[in-house]
Length: 428
Image (tube, rainbow, N blue to C red; front, side, top):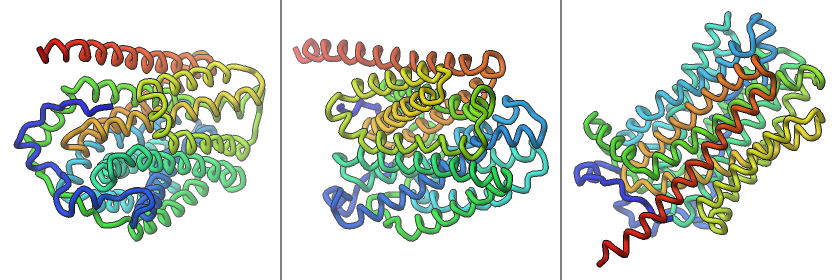
């Protein structure tokens, strides 16, 4: 996939971090010095981000029971966190352009884990939602800064693999957080379980700061609003980036809806599973770890659009399979949904970093904003659909989102063919 032109102005390029000195050849590459430390540090950052961001998702039935609220109301403890992240990811990315990726990521984790230690003491559902919104806003400094750091510090050929490992950390964090909270909550309640997640995140944050190599290719940019708005305008005027943003949002709409509601389905009839077992269901995230980390090879074999078609088809197959009344088939459906989602997310997010020729932090921030808006929409609409029509309602929302992914990818293929036909004409 060749990077699309973003129409960047000379002024914007002058204040955007680009490789300067040392040379681009000194950027990190698999097997080279510092690459493993960098990969593990960002892996841990991904673990902490997803563990904190979705720490209440597996616990929603317990939260509903304690505060006497419905699934649609309890789901706001998830939607508020992802919504806070979506709103603040662009401003935080601007700060990372000025003060550095590592600095912003470190500060974001520090604030997020501090709020995480306050969450267990929330006296009401309203206070819990507010704390979760603040926590999500704090975590906004991680996703866009991490992908921008990788785009600057890792050689282009290794970028998809490196971002895939970061996304794999997301999947491990999401999985371990939900599994741990499920079993801890079964014995000691949801408050203790989110406290445990907070302590784990503290450990990840400390290790991240100690391990992440200092950036060698970062150059501080400007915090002037005019420059920031100009960069955002350039990215939003790029048709390919717009399609990638929409794809990320739609994939996350599926994922957010399914995993917000699945606890209610599995604890209710006909399954009636205990909270610990429901938490263990999230072990299927291991499938996401594998599919995200192999996204680079998938793109190499099928191309970006082919990989997106495969990811969308896998997700849709899982949604349909999850309608079965057999627990085994429901679990298999979750495996397919998870594999398809993480593969699609890794492909789309890495394509954003490769497409943007300037202002990579803002390009990634816009993707992350769309992505987490999709999560908030999926969590809320999925819960409302479940309340109105049961699990089939949630599946219906997911299938519409997958249809959107396929439609956008088809339109992108047509646009590429039209552009290819015009190039020979322009050459003459």
